[in-house]
Amino acid sequence: MSATPLAVSQEFQDAPDTVLSSGEFPVALRWRGLEPYNQSFDAMRAFTDARTPDTQDEIWLVEHPPVFTLGLAGDPAHLLLAESGIPLVKVDRGGQITYHGPGQIVAYLLIDLKRRKLMVRELVRRIEEAVIETLATYNLATDRKAGAPGIYVAPHPQGANDRTRAHEGAKIAALGLKIRNGCSYHGVSLNVRMDLQPFLAINPCGYAGLETVDMATLGVAADWRDVALVLAERLALQIGGLPAIAAATTGSTE
Image 1 (tube, rainbow, N blue to C red):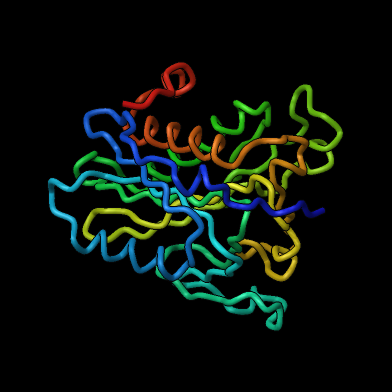
Image 2: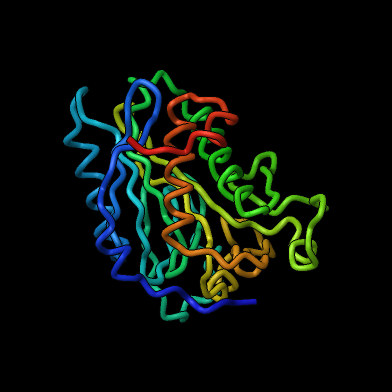
């Protein structure tokens, strides 16, 4: 099932940057708008290469035109339809192949792990928790899968509607990171309301037959920018080491 892609509103394009609470080290939030994937990719690497120990961490919120991305050790065989008309970009993150397109939030996390004393596995866990918390605010029950990074519709969630039950186990968010000199880039994507057809042209994240879903398909009519802001706040709080209960009750910006 697919949904109508979102258009990027002028409000989103004009959204002001701000600073989010994130423990001892605040995080700058950058709204970058609809941006070609390679432009974001080049900018992330340049930002990371230019960092100093005093550089503030940042979260970038982006929406991309249609593109497939293949991780550093990814298998091109997971692209099932070579003539889809959608470009394929090989990148330096972990993971296999995924799709980015309009109606999907992409949050890039430019974080100094050394300064925050964070291990990569713990950072991944905190990113996943932030997505789970974000979707819970829209009454969507989601969870992790062992050995398969990302977030999935929870099995038999209590009080689930018919749409949610029909898509149990479907993937709604994907993540992949690159760590260079103790700092991360790349990040997490969350499907809000998008055309899901391109996911049928790949084995999403390397898993044949894995269903990919978005919030709209699960019955949630949510504004892209509203969801993006909730996600950014949850990410900042999780990265800052604050417990989940604080993220659920605070959610403020500085």
